[in-house]
Image 1 (cartoon, rainbow, N blue to C red):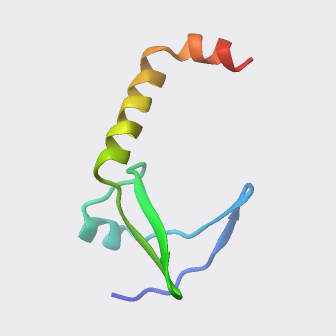
Image 2: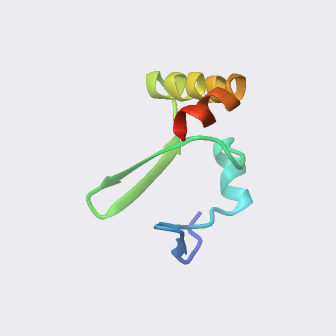
Length: 75
């Protein structure tokens, strides 16, 4: 399925909106982590899996468990 989308500015980055139908095909939801890479002249976006995902999940749990302490450390 090919859908034309526009690249949009998002703060200091550029983003693209992914239609709900495509997210559904991939089993993804808003907020799910994805891995982004370039392959020649193509951009590849796929569900993030493996060791990197486990590390990111651990970081998320840490932020959820110790928000005040991490905020204090960031000051």
